[in-house]
Length: 201
Image (tube, rainbow, N blue to C red):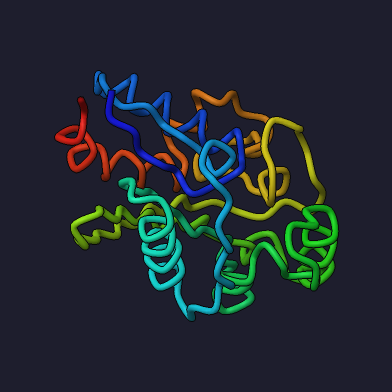
């Protein structure tokens, strides 16, 4: 069984990659998270782009563990905010990972923006780094609009205020399977499947 490290402690992200590999009928890969390997220092996310951050995260984890690594950097790009919060999505309100504060700040910034100008996209760049130094980055986007208040509790981050194009439910009101099929992370991870399949033991 080949081991691949997904550089995250987020159980929902680990489950997502596992489901995508199962759906693609890729067997022989065990997906590990950061909790499954000896701890190593997280480099700060200082890149100006999702690509820079994802590649740096993957490269650091390969050097620390010697395993093939998938790392992602993702965020919300809001049209009316010129693509922000973008790479700053997780710390938009100042503290890293305070989802509610980030949501409240973003909704506050969009209070006067009319419904027809509330377009946005979730963006995910997933990078694969191999122990031989090979690196690949792929990008997935999920277009939609920003609601005026949060709904649903199936997601995390900005999911409760994002309604995907063509739908009426927020991302946090979708089932994990519905989300996998359309989400930015699902799209990016599926693009990596042809590169992960040959690693299967």
